[in-house]
Length: 254
Ligand code: NAP
Image 1 (cartoon, rainbow, N blue to C red):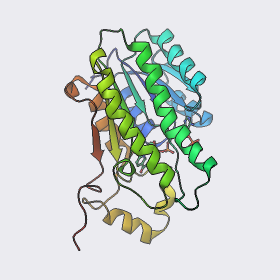
Image 2: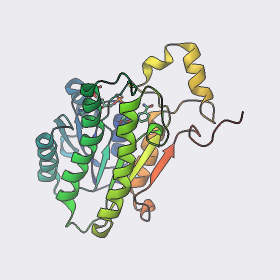
Image 3: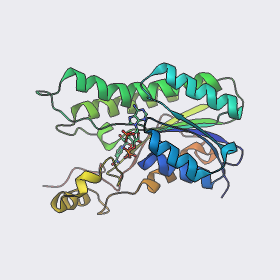
C-alpha cells in the first residue's frame, strides 16, 4: 500500500519504540517524514537507515521546549511545503505516589508528556490551519490515561491530561478540518518497558493482565496510528482508542 505517497508526517519520539515503528510504517507506505527526538544518536541511526534525504527532515529537540518545537515544525514546513500529519510519541516514565512524589519529578513528567504534546499540537495546528488538504494528529496516551495506576501518579496525571486535551482539541480543530485522536496502548515491548520483562514472574503477570495473553509490539500501535491519519478515519476525531489487548476492557471477576 502507498497510502502516504505525497504526504508529510511529523513524528516525535522517533528514535525508539513506538515512534520508530510509526516512522518505518509510514516510510514503507510512501510518506516523507519529519523525525524528532532528544536522543541524538538514535535519531542519526534512524535517518541513516531511511537513506533518502529528500524524504526526511530530522531534528534533535526537547519537546517540552516551545522554541525548539516551533523551529522543528517550521523547518519541516520549509523543506516539504505542506504538512499532513503529526504523531506525538515522545514520553517518559513517571514513578511516585501522592505521599512521596517530589514536585520536581511531577513537573518533569508533565513537561515532557503533557507540555510536549500540547506544544507540538499547537505548532502543527498553527502551521496547517489554513491548508485545504486533510490533516490529522495522533497523540499517544496510555492505559494509564484511562485507569489509575498506583505509584505512577505523575505518569497517570500526564496521560489523563493527554486524553483530555485530545478530546478538546478534536472539538476545537474540527472546524479547521484537522482531526485529533489518541491511542491508549497496553504494555508494549519497547526500550521503555524492557526492564519489566527481565523478571519472569513480572513478565507472566503483565501477560496475564491482557485479555489476549501477551504484551503488544510497537508495530501494532503504528498500524492503528497510521490508520488514524488516513481518510479511512475521516469521521473520527476527539477519540481515545484503546489498543491494549483487552487490558482495560473489564474489571476482573472476583
Ligand atoms: P521509548 O522507546 O522510550 O521511546 C520514547 C522516545 O521519546 C525515546 O527516544 C526518548 O528518548 C524520547 N524522548 C523522551 N523525552 C523526550 C523529550 N523531552 N523530547 C524529545 N524526545 C524525548 O518509549 P515507547 O515505549 O516507544 O513510548 C512512546 C510513547 O508511548 C510514550 O509517550 C509512552 O508514554 C507511551 N506508552 C508506551 C507504552 C509501552 O508499554 N511502551 C504504553 C503506553 C503508552 P530517550 O530514550 O533518550 O529518553
